[in-house]
Image 1 (tube, one colour):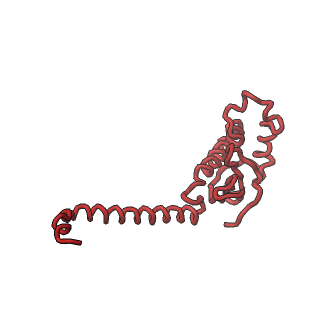
Image 2: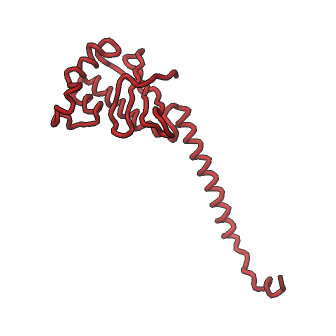
Image 3: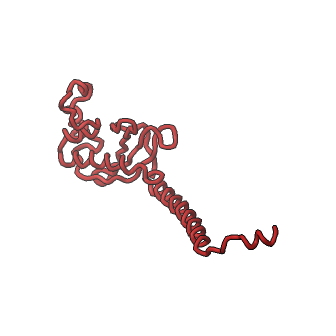
Amino acid sequence: MSLTDLMDAPAYDPARDDRRRNIIIGAILAIVLLGAVALVGYVSGHGWLFTNLGYEHRVSNFFDALEAKDYAKAYGIYYNDPDWQQQPAKYSGYPLARFTDDWTTDSPVNGPITSHHVDKSVVAGKGTFGSGVIVATTVNGDHKIFMHVNRADKTMTWPAPYVFKY
């Protein structure tokens, strides 16, 4: 390096160094925050980055409809088809009357559902986010029900393919 190269060097810009430092600190903080949110979601039972919250909300809406004795709405949520009444032949294998019996007199809690609390959810199936989500719900204060929500079409299944301890 010659003396003329040093003389032609750009002037020191402290603002540039500050910006660079701030960008690096911001990127590190963003990565740490993302990691913390991912971990908290997983540890709290709502999936990595809280990805299962939508499925938990769907199950909660289902039980809200059952509590309100709005079995037609609950049936639509179960099949993810609010307009199910427009095509009754599609659901003739499991009609509303049978569904209503299954969730009242023959329910997993031996009677009508009067209260619920969504407790936890886990990914079901293969892959990082699986093919579905199993949502654990406490019903009528002391009964645990595990509902399976299919990721592809948002339909539900009870009983779930498996249960988990928590």
